[in-house]
Amino acid sequence: MKNYVLMFVVLTIVLILSILVFFIVKNQMDKPEIKNLQIGDKHYQVEIVRSEKDQIKGLSDRNSLEDIDGMLFVYDDSRIRSFWMEGMRFDLDIIWIRNSKIIGFTENISYQDQGKSYKLPEKCDMVLELKSGRVKNDDLKIGNKVEIK
Image (spheres, helix red, strand yellow):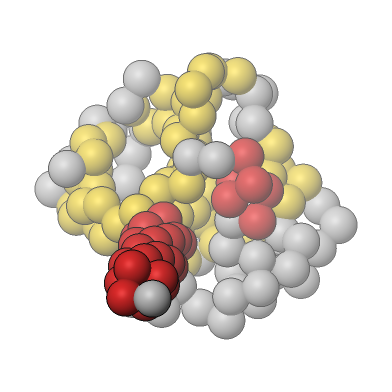
């Protein structure tokens, strides 16, 4: 009888620890990846998105950028990218990046342009979305180096 009670206690502890580890790992996986980004002498806190699911969602359904300056879409390859404003609630500037250098801008995109898509006719491997007006206010230029810190 004592062996059954001991086995029950041990199995219960193992089950509780397994559930605890699962939720800790899941919580860590759900946290967005936040990095410092430097463009010239400007510094930005950006959320990095790498998975296709997160890239498709982007900043949709958010009311603002909250505690970050923007979202950086990082891709495994370099090709022409297309972005749309589906589900957006605020205006954006899009910065197109290849080989860690700015290659183009699409500025002051209205969140009301829900059906319109935006793309640069050049290949890129990263795209940065910032609040509308930041390209001009921060004096960003084509050719600026982009560094993830």
